[in-house]
Amino acid sequence: MSPAAHESLEIELKFDVDAGLPAPDLSGLVPDGRVGEPQTYLLEATYYDTEDTVLAVNRTTLRRRSGGTDGGWHLKRPSTVKAARRELAVDFDEVPYDGGVPAALTEQVAAIVRTGTLVPVATITTDRTVTSVFDGDGREIAVFCEDVVSAESLLPGGGVNRWAEWEFELVDGDATILKRAKAYLKDAGARKASSTSKLARAIGSQPADVHRPALPKKPTALDLVISDLAAHRDALVAYDPLARDDAPDAVHQMRVAARKLRSILTSYPQVLAPEAAAPISEELRLLGKVLGDVRDLEVQLETNELLLARENAPEDLVAVLVDGERVRHERALKSMRFALSTHRYLTLLNDLDRLIAEPVKGPDADRPARDVAAEAVAASYKRLRKAQKGLRDHEVWSHDWVEQLHTIRKRAKAARYTAESTEALRRASLHKVGHYAKQIQTHLGVFNDTAVNRARLLAVGGNTPLSPQAHFVLGRLDAREEARGRKAVKAYRRLD
Image (cartoon, helix red, strand yellow):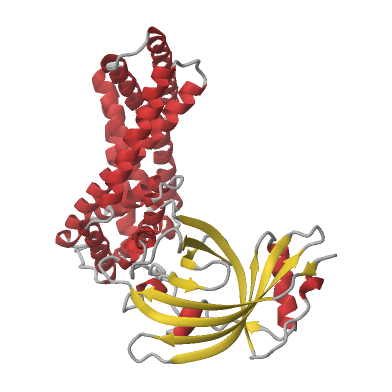
């Protein structure tokens, strides 16, 4: 995220009211509470979207607003918290206005807007009266807004609309005060809001939530595949802005979404026509690699920090294993952000949308989902078991034996993703395969992490001028990683 941008969680209630309806005395909401003196503001906002309002369809609003206490650019998006939205703000004094939307915000909606152009779609003027609500300790817990709104749609055929509404927004309160305020304001004459946002009302439509296609009672293989593709496409798009900001676990989850998308295309090769699925699968592979470069360095850095926390490590070793890895990680992040801004990536998202909306059927498309899913899981499980049996052909801890463990890990991951793609069918036998494969992937994933890290430690020791103490600590780190890896392999071998 740009240093000029700051994000918060907006939790509020919204109500329709008759114009001129007097507001109730809100001091009774909180025991021993009080309300502040009402403050009046004139807010003037311009809302931006594409001509086909793709942001609104995705329940996202982008505006430039002056007046009040928070003038600037605001991007509001859905949140996983009930009755809340994520709000990203950029102040006017942080980013000078040059006639366009700040890059700090366009990057955040790139996966939604793609090749579209952001243009003004509505202007909204609000006469707002704000009253703060304080608890018995004098802490501001909420603000109550009385709004008289005048909105003009700038879209073709748009018009002017006027209405009155109330908003009750948490500042430092909790769900209890929200629940109490909802009943309190309804008793005063407020009604459930007819629209989720001012913009939706301004442009004369109620944006619909974007859902993945629902499975029918007796789904075909195509129904299952399209439903899964849509779910993971949505996850990919949702994690895109978070990954750009390097939010915790975001790059990892975006890579998982890309991998699961590709797994569906490869696990069900006869459900979609190969000529439609194969190019997308290859692009997803490349996207996964870009995300993987960042994720692998992220894991490497976290591991090094944990290892060194238990050592009296000299500064030259910390500089290499922590400071140096941070530099490598930042470079990988920069490359990832560039990749996510290319026409190639945006085309991939468009191609995914097209495949989901207009799938090209393969020979298995109309077969029952339960039959095709069972065959796909059985095939992936068979490949996994074959790799496991192949382990017996090599001497324990030999190079070939270790390489076979890596093959088992990759096939376990494929089996897990294939089994997880069938979760909507609720078949216990398929779930059992996924659970078993996940256990294998977990244990051998730890082993793979230690192998990668030991190789990195070896390279550092051999190619970097270090003090004798640093070499001594490197040896200790390597021994600890070897022990951790052997423990993980031992846990894997106990599974059977």
